[in-house]
Image (cartoon, rainbow, N blue to C red):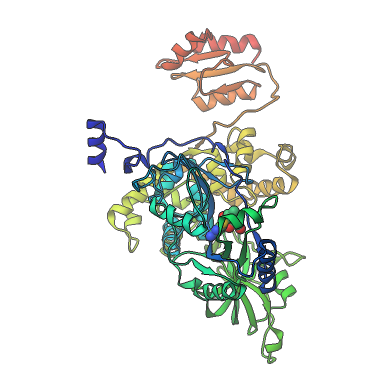
Length: 634
Ligand code: IVH
């Protein structure tokens, strides 16, 4: 790749279809929108055999014909895209959006190797304009591998291949998309200027010749409802043998002239329908119901099932969510239950089958003490929530470590589920702050962690100390506080101390923070154990900065004044002087702008001084600043 890149540069040989042109576009702030050249229609769904027969009858009636030729295809379960080729080169790739406009994902789709950047030469010149529709998807094996990597890195796994593919296509940074194992399949050509296509089959042939990824293996012709139904049945039986997910079949009229005559409705063509498969279900036995303890101490009842294969995946457990649901569905230990695996990997207990009871079944009771630590368990009145009240519960601890290290938290790569478990198991982490005081030697003791990896993890942890307040707030795992709430808090509170001191009313006064969240935050910071943990983390060097802090309406003698500090001051550290200014109603900014009133410079001040003079912002030395303070009555 590097050699090719060099040669292309040296000889000015870079062509539109070179692999070097797939990557390298810069990350963006947000995706642009594209207007689709032809509306991206959707498909009418038929739910059963009768509907399908009605579709066939309608087509025959309106075309006034005994038999209509159909093409049956899998309904690929991915993200729908339209690709626009002009004079043979890929110009635009857009998501469906509302059908009229979608998101511009051109740079991302260019990284998918099976999408040609330039149409293959067929001897004739390519159409001046070609629009194709297709699906971006991920194969199941690739998806599983990706999820394993994510879990090892402490990231949340994707629920299913479709979500993983959609997330990858809608990335802001094409470099991230390029690392994801995406594939494409195309199945329609709504625009093909200057092409002479008589049928859908012709169109697919043409697309194939241009090098576009057409699925050759699973299309089939059918000329009556019986054959379509047989195809549906065969595909449903065979879907688990496919390398990718399909969620039904699509039936299309083959002849393009007939399509024209049938026309389109508002949002979908009258010449095609989607006939989905029912969700994959099976019946199995509940061997046991156990309570599992999560990060925030919530106990979730989980059914241990007699293993059963559903949709090619062995299912042996399913969450029952909470006691209220168990009672409502009346699921008992020993019951036969119907289990469903929809698009998601996560199985779901649909219902119990009470007809199969023999009297030996037992009702599940929430344990009174935590199965992980023996702490007291409290169940809410509506039965929807059960919690272990012991913060030092080891089960919570593993989850807490994983959460602390997660991408939105302190972002410590390599500290996922497995390592968290080991750290607790080997007694290296007995409460959360221990993570920050782990030594290189400690990590080297862990089985399966080579010296180099231990070293890397140690450096990751070391680097995580210098972080932002938002990340720390997420990392602490305060119930109901995710990234968004953390940002709101950081905008209103300069540092952790200010949050530790805030009362419930202060917190609830911020926009977007309701009474329930305020109560949760206040309760968290009011707990002695948590305050001790925070103090310990600070001793261990955790130093969150907060660039979001922007108090409004602060009162005091420095009201309306914005300061930028540079260089070293004698009397105060940077934190102290910032607090001094803010406590008196002023603002501290990190860079010089049109809103800056004073730059205060100690020895060693650099760039900001020249920026100040460019913008005519007065510069004070430390004594000048002190004088200003006394003039203002601070
Ligand atoms: S044809 C104008 N063919 O299903 C008709 N769609 O539920 C264009 N899909 O939005 C669609 N596999 O994203 C067609 N073989 C296939 C398909 C397919 C999956 C998706 C497509 C569409 C959705 C409708």
